[in-house]
Length: 552
Image (tube, rainbow, N blue to C red; front, side):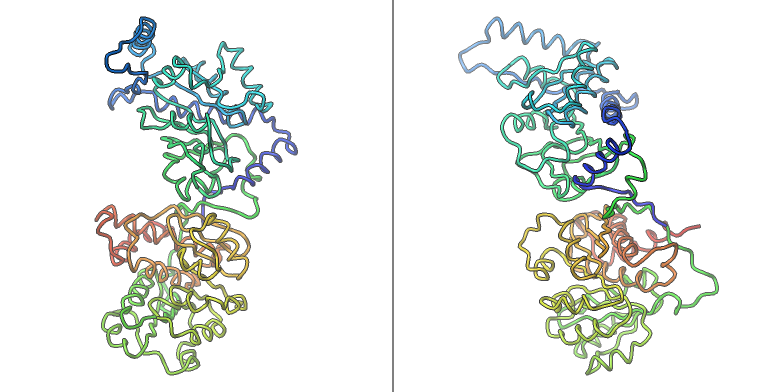
């Protein structure tokens, strides 16, 4: 059973909002009020001193510094004294908020949040960054509500020293410049506003929906982007919160329910989920035997790459596979066999037909870890002849370059596990991959295979459009052999009939296996640190991680 969190692209969110407002009759201003309330709550939480923690401090005062030999004018000195008095005013201490608003509906969220924060007793300075004539109707309505409460939405004016000084001394800043619809680089005054919003000035930033400057679907930085301490996103996460540079810019992500109906959120097509490990695995039956948990064939290994099939076999066994057979070239058989204690190694027969005859009845196969580049005919025959799920990894993928028809013709599930370089060879695309989410989906739809596009925030895409963004894993896993352990876990899961319960299919199992691989890496990193991680450490951590997911 899975409890993954549904997510949505920018286009999906636009359509969800349209349906909610135009077809369900939900007032758009009501949605905006709910969003603003969540943002105001986040600001208040940041600025409410923890009685057990340190006293909050304000940001650095930014102002013009006189050149050597010059002095401040009387007017400048008076202004500085006034600002210093304000900073030292106990009534205002840790209660100053600057709200940077764009002219769109994201800015409307910020304007509404400014009003709510005023009503809660905060000292609020709200500025409009952009063309006032381009404000949306909802943003204008929120500005009127702000006026009715005695507040002001002033125009952003970088040449106004007083405004710049007052904005700089605020204890928290709200980023409501651009929402999920941004698709062009930020320039001009908006770029200056982004620089003023940066957390390195001493005060935390709360971003509305997504940090301004982050592409909602890819996580790419569009010219420049806000680094948020907290991002309050509305209704559901966006891919850009997790992918690319967006993961670093998002900070603490909080998902706010603003009133969109659940059926709209959970019935999107294609379905996008954030795999966060909220799933359970069934308990094994007492009267079972090793044959009930999958017979797995691993084909791999070559001179210089004997560790790859061994790691895959160990990971598969630790992931519940009942029987694991490891077929390797004859010249490395003795090396691999000596390292396999529970897996059963044997030399590759002279023909693919003889290999198929030997492994009749296998429930899953893994082809490719360390196999080398001279077994293309073997890979083709296995793909075309095996009627069980197949994981195609490493040199198995390289063999399929230019031969995706080998994959398209399969009736049993196929899982492809490319990193970016392998993906480029398979598809002919250029690097870097701009939209990894779309790229994985496109290859899955083209081949009919389940695609695991490896990397930071690995993406799993099914042929029917369902997609999962993985949230586990760490930089310590960027080491040789980590992919082999993932391939072993994947194959073990696909070969266990017990796991295909409650409607769970091969694609969902693949997403779970990807998460478990990352979770094992996180568990190992907590114990050993990221610099020292080895693939064996991930395998050693698998029992604990799996045990936490078995249903009572």
